[in-house]
Amino acid sequence: MVKQVQQQVRSGSLDMKRVMDTVKAEMVGLTSLPFHTITGVALDEETHAPIVTMELVERKAIPDSMDLLGLYEVMTDEAGMVKTFKRVSMRKRGDAVSNTEY
Image 1 (cartoon, rainbow, N blue to C red):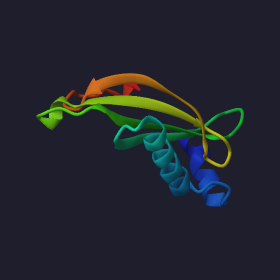
Image 2: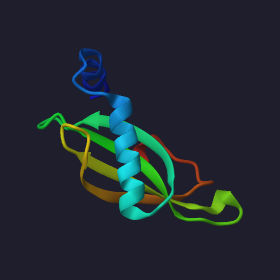
Image 3: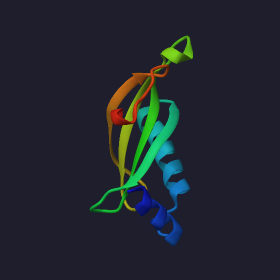
Image 4: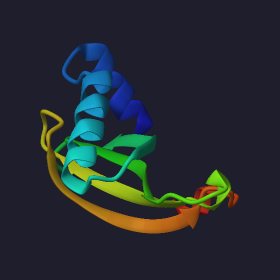
């Protein structure tokens, strides 16, 4: 899947940076939650539209290591505009994350 995204970026049919920036701005605007990080970008096998996974701060805490982060899967159209999103998991910022959790 990563290889497909890289091929589309090289061919000029997908601007990865623009897609990530657009999804970040739209999700912050839609949810009013602070942005933490983008954890991945892949292409939907049927539509070839980008799917972005990202973390947003669900609850701020002191110390920061106790913040609650929500992992979101964001489905976009071919232009990278948000179509749907869902929270797929939550974790404390200080918790270790294994690849199997995503």
